[in-house]
Image (tube, rainbow, N blue to C red; front, top):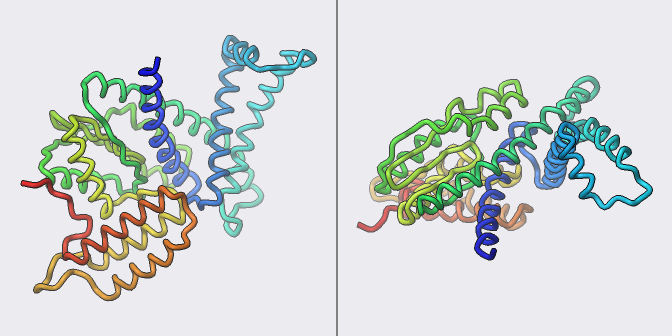
Length: 346
């Protein structure tokens, strides 16, 4: 039993990281960049979507509904028929509350009114389905992936990301190059079509130009000792222990200079944009014996330090930003291209 508990704890930890980032990516497409103060509202929207799915399942499948009713500690004076009616009403109303929450995710200055506001509230029905489906689907995928890894006696690792709009192909190119530079020869393979379902659903629900931002085909970078599955919200690495360690180092060092965010909140991503501006401003190798940095870049790093000193984000995101800032400064000081891949010793 202890072994099973440890196994499920490990699976839950990995699945939790993937789900958090996947929902962050989905919310970016559905609601735009989400400020930290609205993260709680996003969590309530997600929880409401999952509760709606459970209630709907209980109504559609009477046996499940009976199980849920018997599991609830109801007082004797409350009849089960009343509870069934309440579940039906809640299943109809909950998506409207999700849509209302989505309306308040928009900043007050640009929040729609009138007919457009009503449409946003009605979008709660497809959004509820999407978020609930994403939670359940990715939980199952995580369980299957972990079981396969254990069966092959491989190890795995995850690097949460949020790919820039239209940046999936650029990320694939950058990370394939990073792996090859680290001595890991990989080839491209199409990812499983089934795993692209959540991304396609997000594109359909978001509508408009957002649909064009969802990759048509997922990509896997493959070798006999390593598999790297690239999603818009996660880089899943599986393989032999040494290969996974080398791949993780190569990918993590390259992520500083590719088309992906490593954070999900609006405030943290704004700092990532400023760091990307420093990279775009120069990050070159030595030119005539001089490091590839300018006084303007150093001043911007100092300004970012001031921002980081008072930035109100989760500590995990703050650590990511600080690591990226230190890596950029290190690369500029030694005259290396920013996001230089860490090479293993010869």
